[in-house]
Amino acid sequence: MLGVAVAVALTGCSTASSDGEGGPSAEPAATGALVVRTEAGSKAAYAPSHSPYFYTQGFLICREGGSSEVAPVLRSVSFNTRLKPLEVQPVIRRIPEEADRDGPPGGWSPILDALGKPGAFEDTPVRGDFSYDFDGARVTESCADASESWSAKMELEIVMKVPKEGADIDGFTISYDIGDKSHEVHVPWRMVGCGTETDREMCGLG
Image (cartoon, rainbow, N blue to C red; front, top):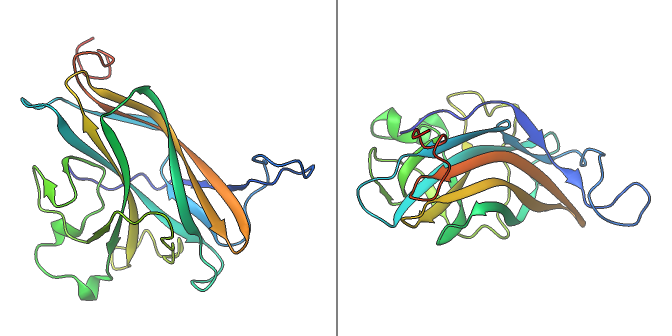
């Protein structure tokens, strides 16, 4: 299953609080903040006939303002789990500008969710440059162009290896730097790979 991510922006906040004591603050990050183009919600994958299996969900990310020279630098992702997957990894996917794409256009569509993992999706061929080198990746794509079909895009793919019991991630937090300052953005999106112990209603069994 492939689809376009919901275009609602979640922006980061600084890890320095207003009183200087540290910890996240409610103040927006500096110009050039990381934006995750999604909203609160959830999505689940019905379990295939085999286990374990891989399940991927994608999120468009971009830079709000600033310039590509002063871009967010990704550092880490932490996950809130209700039911732990065997593995979970952040993967970066880069999509070039339309003029540099070849083959069927559907292969360049943003990923909403898909069974499988980069290089081995089960339903539809997915194009793009995938990288497991998350720490240090620079987010140079501007949010001003992110909704344009012709523009270059950057996605964060969350790849889960799901056991027969299932997996349930209830949101995640991205840590990143702009210059010498650290920031973070929380994404309240629930991701469920269905199995024998996952929420029955989420998995269409309730």
